[in-house]
Length: 237
Image (cartoon, rainbow, N blue to C red):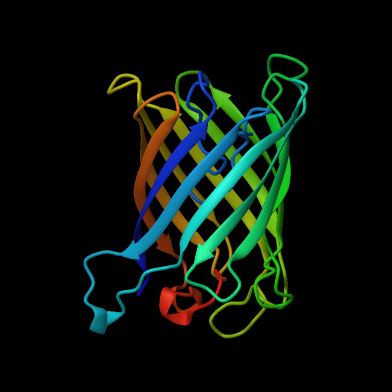
């Protein structure tokens, strides 16, 4: 049986006057968005199974506390980086980095191009999942933005439930504002290939409370539940 998790994330942007932007991920896969230069993005991410008894595998994953900052922005090229702390775990700290050229950087039809990495852990062959990726994204009129890309990671850690290496695959995503319902409402859905702990189909809604804060709530349907760590494992995911 696949695990269906409810996740709830509170995003706070520490930058007065900055319009709320989609988080640096769509739901779980990277997006083309980059934190504006000189600003900070705080988030609190918690995931837990829903409507399942503990005797039938109810679990909760470590809570992630993240801080992302915009380091560079010349319009056609942007860079962000950050640190994540997952607790409770034995080795909670990991790092991330993203570089991107936004849509229309060189002409009106040009898609966004982005590359980076995340979950660069500090414990060799234990928490250094070291996912690196490259992707493109393109907005189509009022419909929304489509994202596609590929990723690879640590072959020693990214395995399926049978212990076979499954460290590289593709990802897809779509996100859009829903102004006909409310200008503050956003929807996203994404898929991350692989039967390792990163494989999942996810979707969610975000509500912007103000220019500086938003709440995202949604579901994650993991491809293979047996490879997903929980708080009871006391390890970094």
